[in-house]
Structure formats: structure tokens, C-alpha cells
Length: 124
Image (cartoon, rainbow, N blue to C red):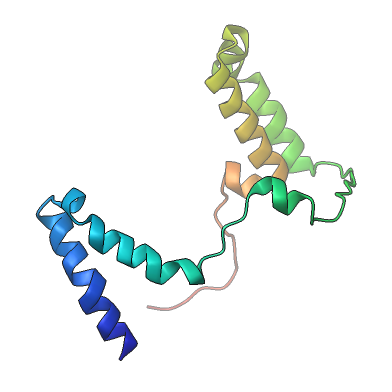
């Protein structure tokens, strides 16, 4: 019931105004909509929320790369294109390289997917 009323009051007229490109003339409708929604919205600033959060603790846990990750990492760093971008020093290119290295470190399947090998065969 309340959904139907809300739709009749706001959604239908607002969609019509958007479609007819006359939203600027519907300020009364928009102010009524804001008035109805305001009690249900929580708006807080970052500086207010930061004071309520507990102190952040950072723990560094080092873990070695697997053999496959090491190979992918080294191969990527030895590519001609990678060396060219590093030599050029282009910011976006450097960020792209960092993202690819991050993929290798997080999970090598993100960087270079392998086909699954299985002895199981399904008949059609």
C-alpha cells in the first residue's frame, strides 16, 4: 500500500519530468521527496566518524611466492614491453605494471589462467 502511494506521489511524476527534460521545474516535488526521506537517511561526516573508530593496527605477514608465481613475476619483468614502460617512466604505465605484479602475487590465475587438467571424461 505505502509503496503504491509513494510511487504515485514521486516516482511517476519524477520519471515523467526526467523523460520530458523538465526536472528543474519540479523543485516542489523534489523538496517534498527530500522532506519525506530525510528522517530515514543518516548523514555523517568522515571527521565525525573517525573519532568513534578504534585505533588501527597494521600487521605485516610475509609469505614467499610459489614457484609458479616466481616464474611469472620474473618473466613479466623481463618482457621488452615492461622494460620499455619502466624506462619511459609513464605514471599510468607504471601503475599498470604494479597491478599486473599484484595479480601475480595475489593469485597467478588472475594473471595467466591455466586450463584445468583432469582424468575425468564426460560422455555427451
